[in-house]
Length: 370
Image 1 (cartoon, rainbow, N blue to C red):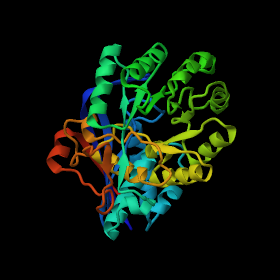
Image 2 (cartoon, one colour):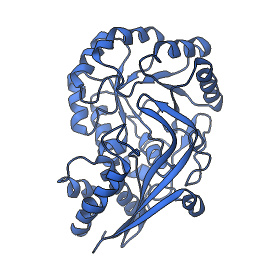
Image 3 (spheres, rainbow, N blue to C red):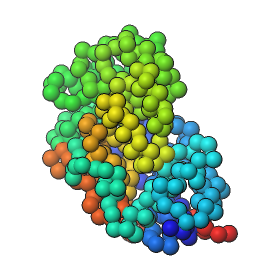
């Protein structure tokens, strides 16, 4: 394909309820969408960076800047390309994995649309639907938490993930176990909120038979995670620490994790996400698909990825209604705890013009030639 240009589109999506984690509270999800225009088809990408560099060092305006000044011009200058070559073209530019992932996603969508092939088949999916978990933010009190968890279980979610931080960890887990029983698939996510000195405290979670504790320590502390894994019986899962197949291999080799959360935006794209999946399968390490409060575009791609054989644990591929009253695509609706894998070409979904326009705050066209 040859690149004709890329449209950057800023959107602001009100959340149906505030979502609080150890690094802040969101009431609105600001996102950067990309429309990649080639000589064969158009494709959509979604940059999952947040408005501020809180989850990672990336943020929306930084992603827009590096796309405008470096990534898009480099891809345009590379001549004919396909999705498999995007990462190589962009490799000279250090970091900025979320921006790179969004551009590669748009190219991949355009390429597959032109060829009439669905993303799920391209990635190697083996399922036509995937089980869904839900992420439950930090609440003001235990009563609100129990009401929220009960509502999600009534909706059919097959796994509950509780966000935790110091001061909101053991008691929320105890309350959920006591109210809903031991049969509920339950895990916790710390988003780097602890240090190794908290190991004895985190061991107090062991009796609750959790599926895992996700990213308890800072992302650059693989040795600390390896030490923690020897001090607690709850399986350690890494999220922010996993930025590539190389870092995943290092984490597995060190014993820093026994489960991996794969987020395509965090690792540079869906093709690198597939490489991490293959690596983990080779080492018998289960994986699951994390979420970043995506629109229906990113959700479609995540569901396709989660249909690969190594995704043996329910991911954060929640229904659209978990976060948004109105999505920019036709909504993903939970069916007995599962979401269907899109079967159309590319992502299998497209933005709805009116819904997209309603949440768009700005656009910018980057031509392939200037």
